Length: 456
Image (cartoon, rainbow, N blue to C red; front, side):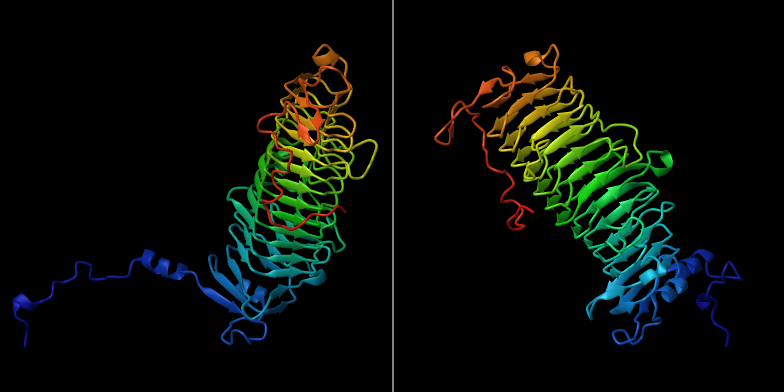
């Protein structure tokens, strides 16, 4: 029986209706989760028993979850993926041996989380290509590789290296002995909250050659903890920040600039009991591809104590740098007759040294050599340094016949009358005519809770 006209459904306007192409494409592009378990003990439904097989099958944007086991493979990642270790049942270990890197990343925006990457002999644990960017490497353990991470990036997207542990990456091979190594160029990168111990050459080293192809800039290195490790080294690097890091018992310097470093801020770091110099600005042409000195850097608010050589050194043409508000004490533990100063200027030009507290260093508090000139040394508080609190060996027409300006500094001893504006004498442990806010204690001694520091 035909329907009454009032009950008939309206005829579709498009008689050949099809689902919209965009809707179908959205369904196809929904990301998937792929499971990997080497023996299917933790994940019986895992589709794959190797990480490489899952990577080959995955589509861009997919997530690969890898369960406990040891995966003897070198995994190349040529697409945007998230690889996440599921370690509730035990460690997820990638052990490539001599086959290459644990992970070789050749795509943008790849995320690697929670793995133990070990024993990459002759290769880094993780290799990050200069051609891509946006890497997110978090909460991994990198141990016993030739070096930990080969950090290169185009800088188009921000790269994050955070919460990782770098342990004894000293296996034989090129660039051995480094936690993070970079020499192909990197920018727009954050290195934060990582732990380093046991590297023999450097915790982090950036040694691009200064060309545009190997540019190094816009780096943020902060809140890392280095214990019994090695230096943070920058060469040919600009417009970056090294802040709030702790380095205990470095086998070299705490922070080392090898030359060509400019517009970098080094602030609020705690550096203790290293073998060489706390913060060392050199133009080290013998070891690095540099042609220019370190200029226009800011070294502010750091604690530098107990180093074998000196606390802070500006050397070999270092110019237009600011060294301000640092606490520099008890350096010169190696008893080397040529070092042992709190702050030293060696062939350094037009730098500003101000508002620092410099105490109990084995040789001099602030020492300026004969080749340094046009530096301004202002309002520093100098106490109990071994030879002189204030020493300037230059000759010129400025303060006390030197080539530098000394103004408002207080202390006890000077090699040239006139370097100190106020002479402070000790009497039964108390300073007369001392600054109202003067405090000769280490301002950072109780702030970090990393245990008692011992000399090497």
